Image 1 (cartoon, helix red, strand yellow):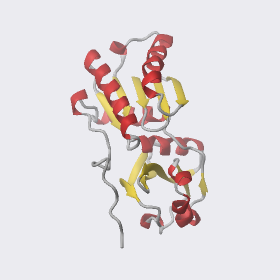
Image 2 (cartoon, one colour):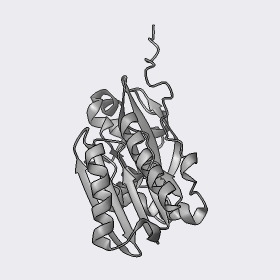
Image 3 (cartoon, helix red, strand yellow):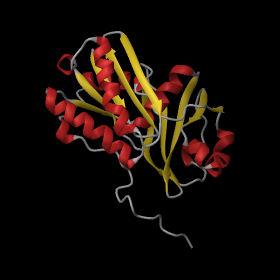
Length: 231
């Protein structure tokens, strides 16, 4: 399968290209540089592999949740490339990509990913390892205040790891849940190479959509809305 994956939902600008069994990746963590970095990274990836957009089977999009502006950048680029090349897009959770990296690098049965959502909240995802190593949602992705997470009261059969920048951004969240983790690992942002296996499964499953049907996973629909003050 030939897939191009991209993610700009965090401070990382990440592009990966899969040509059959060969995978290459370009990954840079530079805040507010995604517009400058993304297209050159895509073009150089394709040039080095000597393939064109027409050779691809689909584009895999890291679809958030994450930075609103970053998500829009990746979605707009993916849509433009897909329209121009007649390709479909496989939207993949950016947090699931973080979980996929942890499953690949650690002996984990469950991964809890937290990313900074600002406004005193994180985006939270809880994933178990599927039969093929692909993350499976244990609970729907959601916004979470820095308090104890109810789903973590029961222990999984195996290690439970915390990943994502949200644990660093909100120490109170970590303090409220740390005893329920085997470890907190230094996997902070999504890497495009870990979107590929999830995207390939999505192609087989029929999850690819036409570019006009991409809906970024904002979770917080009203960007400017402040959390309700509690008495």
